[in-house]
Amino acid sequence: MKLKGPVDFCIYYRNPEETAKSVKLALKLGFKTVVTSITLKEQDDFKELTTKTNELKKMIKEHGFENIFTRLHLIGSDISWLKSCLRKLRYEFHIISSRPLNVEALRFVARDRRVDSIVYGDRELAKFFDKSQMKLMRSTGTVLELQFNSLWSSTHKWLIFSLRRTLGLAIRNNVPIVISSGSSTLKNIKTPLQLASLLVVLGIPYVYAKQAICTVPLSVIKRNMHRLSKKHVEPGVDIV
Image 1 (cartoon, rainbow, N blue to C red):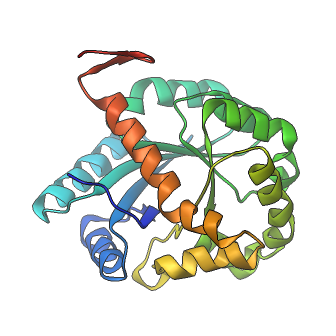
Image 2: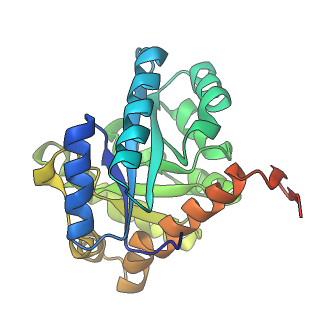
């Protein structure tokens, strides 16, 4: 299986039928790789997560989708809960992302190498995506993820103003950036050009915008496919 970009790094799972339609549309619009994401909040039942995960994997198999990957999106503030989820579920999904709900959780997920991306989008935490946060993310290779639909919605337009500063900090500190659609319905699916264009509007050079839908998400997927392979024992140790 050869991985290709552009990548939609996040299409949220709803149910097998709707998600299959969303994936098909994303592929039709030009994406070569798609990541389907299941959200888990602190109050959610793990049994429900298992059901959704099995449904998603079955849907991917039944439709014969290639280059479609699974992702777990953790939303929470309790560090013990986050640790438990990462310990139990890291190897059940190709990608792990998080939207922390307080500063302590934000710093924690930036330090934990099991978290692949941190989603930017909480008003109260925007100011804490500072130089200290960027240094933590750079040290662990954690990606700063922007989601088109949450940023473009009328209730989140205030984020655009603080986002320019955050993106500038990320680039200066060599923190990788990804932009995804963050869509959960057919009408919210975006084209690769729309995703890249939002970054350009925010003042990001086109070369970085292109990397955010191709090079960066592909590198995360490839890294994790290697980590999940039987040849990988631990960081720096592989079976030849």
